[in-house]
Image 1 (tube, rainbow, N blue to C red):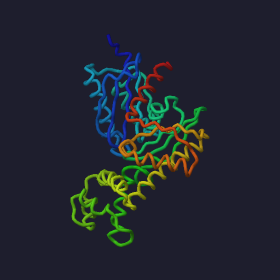
Image 2: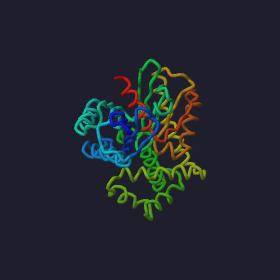
Image 3: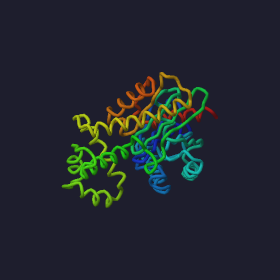
Length: 313
């Protein structure tokens, strides 16, 4: 019979969605259920909605598993926007009030990714989804990060950054400041407008402009594959920016040239061309030979960290 005091929770939350995995200490890799909800990056959606989505994801996991919700033995939450003590304190307060687990650890969303990817927790974790971030750890336990500054100051190589570059290419072409590109009719068709000048009303009147802009990112990859030079340049630039994040972290931690690299995020998972560009730039420009693991569910790494948290008691 399943003992509630052996339950583990692994949670992965970002700017688009939140996943909560439920397993047991006896076999953390055997997932009992997966619960999902909306974004839990409190920097993106605010603390109230972020905590509501965390609670919904956990509740859904218990419901799907057919287990009455209870206090788990241990939980690890890997969340975007959880790098600072002030951010973590909000999450820990919610976890205590929700009686989430007897032992709780809150880390940024790259930490479980590296655990899921390399297995050793050593190397660089790269996220490119709604936002972007590189985080790494070496054998001495030292860590470093690059990126993760948010869409106003960074998020290079993310869906938002690529979509923004697509929009700029279209308006530059419309002005005559830049070359003509197949992105122009593609963007108009995607946004259901007739001409580039209509972009102003379409973008600025959107309820969440950032999300609408991020939806344009796949157009860059489709048209780069069709040999549109402007789209190809956008993809290459995104790859270089992400490779630079990885190189910066690897250099600071003095990681080996045969570099363990764990990658996740919708853009990296859905667009192999971007990962190929990153590997190419790392190899050619920065002289690293990345050993890449694509992680489709970073919450599995959070489960492993929850199991280690329990074992440390």
